[in-house]
Length: 206
Ligand SMILES: N[C@@H](CCC(=O)N[C@@H](CS)C(=O)NCC(=O)O)C(=O)O
Image (cartoon, rainbow, N blue to C red; front, top):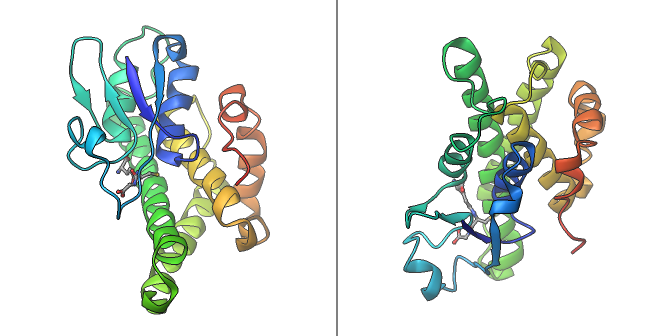
């Protein structure tokens, strides 16, 4: 399999963490790829018309995206403990946690494009503030889940997505100080981030 990838993408990180946790990492060739929303990547567009990362090329010629589809595909390839619980409350809880974490990431990535890619004179403060509100609301919700113990139990895609979202905030929003406001989440992440898969996928310093 070939993974169109960037070491700084938190969505790619989700895929890599799932691959490592399920023993599939050695079967994935990483193809470094650059994406910027205002510069079309023609090469990638032949595989993924959205020109986004991650994009996976399977051994049988399929092209899969986005990160949720790729993670679930990888989970279908191994016989160990599943990252996507097969059914029932455990499944919907994990998927909902993934959706919340991915939503925080979407807001974080979009706001980053607004503040770091868009020319300063065209930046829209209110829009940026709206994305930051989603991030902060999302973190508050996750802090409650951590407090209830809902981020515990066997490793699953919800926990992995939350871990990657928090890692992204540390990477791109280091000044946000989320730990002070969300001590339950900070405690949970303090342990989760020690996993070998998380340590091996820390984004490189900017
Ligand atoms: N929902 C997608 C989001 C992927 C995404 O936004 N990736 C960013 C990189 S972190 C990207 O490719 N951005 C390029 C663009 O938006 O044109 C997923 O889960 O894979």
